[in-house]
Amino acid sequence: MENQQNYQLKEGEKVTPVMLYTEDHLVWGDVITMQAIRVSTWLRTPAIPQYMTILNAHMIRFTGKEALHPETFTELYIPTAKIIGFHIKPPQQDPLDYDPNEPMRKMEPVTALVGAFQFNGYIRMSTQTNLNRYLDVMKETYTTIYDIEITQPNIPAMGVVRTPYAMVRGENVWFSPRIA
Image (cartoon, rainbow, N blue to C red):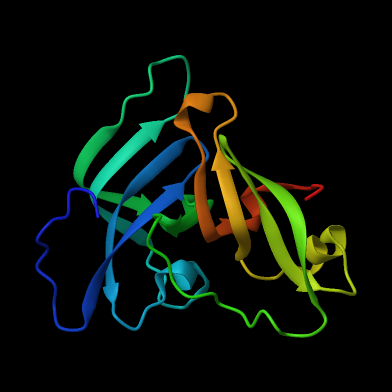
């Protein structure tokens, strides 16, 4: 973990490096959760906080013509309702959250436009549906995209972030089918 801090953890707590995306910010840093919390699916649980606390936070704004320089904060409190993309910072990861041998499921290739970022990955859905119907009946606030390559199309020098899965806030993300 980059710039690992000696946090004062209580019994049963853990530190996990994460990356999150808002309409015009990229933030990365550490979150402290209970050991039992699966951080990669945290935003779909009742344990989701009103404000996400990011420790040792780094933030880049995508709001105009200014140079993209990371700002750093010891602590940064972000309204969870503003988070439209979230994942564990690679190379760390949780185990998959599904059984790959489950019948009648498929991985549908999609592009998700997450603020200033493009997520190319797959949504897991029934073999009996398509992306349009899936999005129409999706009830969860956050949905999972798998096997993702994340880019910032206007700034190719930022490179590609690859992660096994991320959560995206459906009502703030635009989706497009893509050819795998």
